[in-house]
Amino acid sequence: MIPVQFVDRLLKRHFFQPVDPRSLSLFRFLYCTALVWKLASEGEAHLTKFSGTAWYPIPLFELLGIPLMSAAAFQILHYVLLVALLLTAVGACTRLAATTAWIAFFFYMGTYLGFGKSPHTSYVIHSHNIVVFILFILSVAPGVATYGIDGWVSRRWRWWLGEPVSDTAQPARGTAHPAWGTAWPSQLIKLTLGLAYFGAGYCKIASHPLWADGNTLQAYLMSKHLLIDCQPGAWVAQHWWLCLLLGIATLALELTFFLIVFYPRLTWFYLLGAICFHSCIYFTMRINFFPYYGASFLIFLDWPTLQALAAPLMAFAWRKHDILTSGSRLTTPPICGDSLLARAIVLGLWGVLAVCIYGRIESWPFTDYRVFAGRYQISQVQVFRLAVTDAAGRTVWIPRVWAPLSPTSINRRVHAHLDHNDDASLASMLDDLAEYAARCDESARYQSIVIVERTIQSDPRTGGLVVIDRPFRQASLARPSGQQIDALRWADRLKSGETSEY
Image 1 (tube, rainbow, N blue to C red):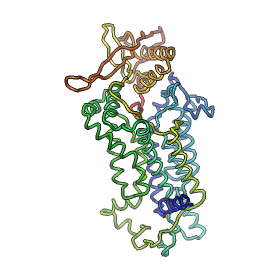
Image 2: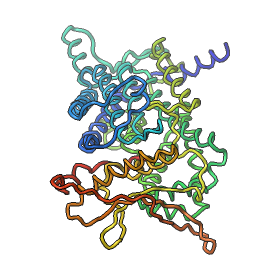
Image 3: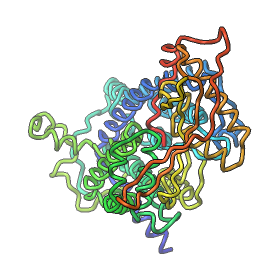
Image 4: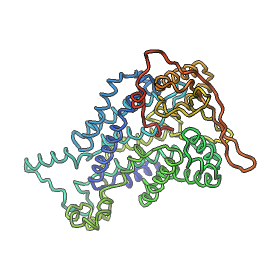
């Protein structure tokens, strides 16, 4: 009974406390608006993946037997998702809209991720998966539409029927205010974010206790530099002591970030640390977590915090609307929103995500977050990158707008083919890439496409890291007559947000 009592006290103290209901509505509006902006800007690039790119279903699609939808259906689903997110943002038909949004996002992003997946692995990038869980939480959260079109219509309707609609009266001591919201939706979103960080840290430690030895981070930084020519990452990798400190800081942040759920005073310390963490990742690896994971940080901008930030300029405007005033502090905090369904959602989602981490389950959107897990040495760095050669034999990296896949995806696929000794698939992939390059190269400047093997060696004299490039596979550019297309048009179609992949 002790564990049961402990969980009961934990839930009542940290999840079923009363909060200002405007906080969740504020997050709902900001978060869904940010998603609409991001998805609308990426829609054209996502649709481009249907232009001849191989598709391999993610594990959950394969398990459920979900086939590849047509490009037209994908575009319609994109519009459905945007409309559902807009309705959720403004609080119109909120529960239905939020439910539609997380279901549509699952099928939409799950389909898109299949274009960057290797046939030999279940792994896909998981920087988008937290969106599914957050939208699900919003779809079942009590009071999610208190401040929105639904809430406004409800208050107008009650006013029309002669019912009291004021939510500014002060509660009696020891009782919950009828207009207060419950903390568990926002706390569960924070816990979901914390578990994502914990999973990333746990996988690193589980793969090797000495992950933060400096050498591992050096290898990862150089590996990314070989793919995308990221000079800041290469500079950091040249300094072992800096990589050692950054590796220790990374594990400390990831393994303890979830503490903000139970110790709110640590929130701004960890939030600032997470922003610095992702900023460093972007500048050294060009991996951008901010559009999706960063948007979830908006959950920390609750209404009381916003009021405190705006107080010097607008104190007179907020004073009469403040629900949680200092005069209404309760000696015994009331329990708010505690129900069997709420407990099932909180403990159920927490349990599922924890099992995925402990069981090392990879089935998007469920994942163990094994990003950059495993000890890595400079001698193990092996990267494959595309280049083209001209008539004079000079080799240059292939223009980004030519590639149907990002450099990271191509590298991952080549490694997967080699790990499984699938030489036929590798040759087929290279032929497809040669055909794409030929169509783009309207001026016929280049003769062949090359997969270049890039490795790293340590210079024994200076101790610095040296890049070694070797041709690995090569194929001539196929130029079927009458089938070339306008290079500029092709380039525009193949532009995509590839830097977010890792």
